[in-house]
Length: 141
Image 1 (cartoon, rainbow, N blue to C red):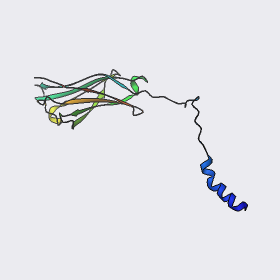
Image 2: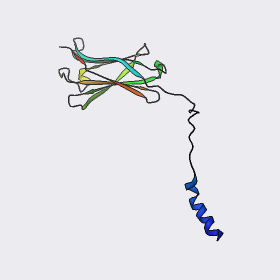
Image 3: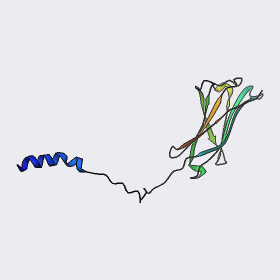
Image 4: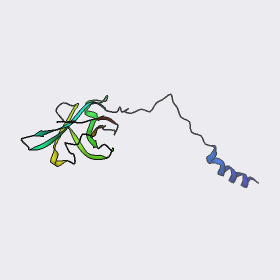
């Protein structure tokens, strides 16, 4: 009669276990903080030298882990329906919190005469934490 009990005990063994979490000792290692888009601007103006419109995107991005933890900034431009029209890399400058890029209008899907764009300035850090700031671009009359 001991054989059936031994088989039953082996069958129930996985159900008898429990998991204990110890909240008094938090995990060690780096704790990442997300970047913060402090301010941003975008817009379009006519450049007579290029004989083209220029679109520009700029942002001030900080990070509690240090400005160098920010690894990428993008400008995602949406139309009035909320559909993505174009995405642009915003590039780092000599100032570690300042990011900037400008683009010839003829190289984009954007129309400088369209007044209903919104721009999401999105910043990512080295651990893929992110922040976004939505702005309305300035369109030169």
